Image (cartoon, rainbow, N blue to C red):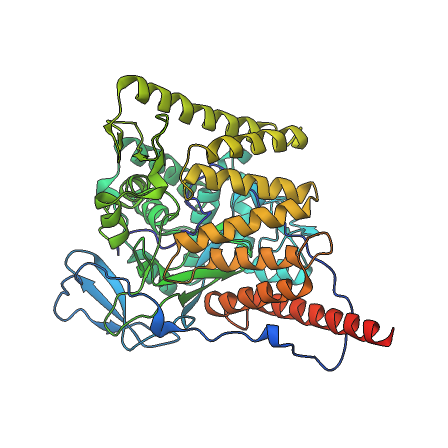
Length: 540
């Protein structure tokens, strides 16, 4: 096993106690226009079949050498999968037979999961849904959406609550602290279930003395507060914290925004690639791994631990620091041998149409037309890049207290970035995300639709040759906005966009998922509205 099991496009490390700058996206939705027993299926609603045969193959490096006698079947999977130990990558999970896109591979309930600090008071600690109406009367920290959820969670929270009441300061009850307490409580209630967690890689020997000291302080506090419940020594709890830090998953909501963290022992065995063939979607604390491109027999099941929209050097740094390995996938090879639009900008020399490869820090930038930049050109580029960052930060800083000013700054930032950055630049993508959220909060749905469409096309390009949940989510957002009366999109075009979203959701989320049903119902509503319009016109 390489390291931590899951990060999606907007995820931060689940073990981190710092807050993510990204906001939960609120998607506006037009209410249904009416109900009708018999659904009228229009030609525009024909959903195309997934043409897996025409998808471009993703050529990965040669498969790692298997340790003899290490192959076993993975228990509890939806399709037959092998667990193998490889000399270069550790444990990994491999396909036994051909797997088509949209196949559910593994469904796993979290061994232990907790809401992150930011969402602890705004979401249910049992089902992770927003707007809870009950709270624990003892610790007053955990919230629940119903008495049923509170009863379900009480099995574990009964012990956890006692610990939270002893914490010297609420600031110490961080996401990681609460997660480790939950894991140890689960171990206390069912010691046999801890075996798979204990078998996960900790990378304890690779960590810095400063990090070990920080973890040791947390371990000592947990051992003291959980006396009578925990039977592990401070050193063993320290190793558990190390395991959690590199195996925990950031649990996301339906819009793929992080709300919680959890440990999933089986899914933690899925190794990383920047060109994955599988991705995870969540329903509360249940994780579902689905194939997002064709997988051949014997091919390793891979997902991405990092945000693929980031440039290769950023991904490699994160993988090295957090998971202690360097990625050697084809996407990273391509970044070392070819110009990557995520790390390029337009040449600022008058009349030059070249592009400049940029990095952090900016070392010997070179234009692909006129070569190495002069010192004055480097300084000009550095100032331009710093100016873009300054504009973006100003827009973020005034977002809460002055959204109108934030919107003006964000639009100014985007206009400036478009003159400098390449289309897939992470900086440009961040600004578009910010504008998308600002337009929605200001109910400027026409601008929100245009921005969503642009984001959808960018993600399609980033996740080319395979399906990905973020592309499906952006397609659904685009469809919801297109179906609103405030958007300048006709009903036929809205239905076409809806059919596209439904096709993507079928692969990445499945027909049983709530979002698939939501998209399907919206399409039905638009069809009935369109038929009603035709009938009214015919009658007149």
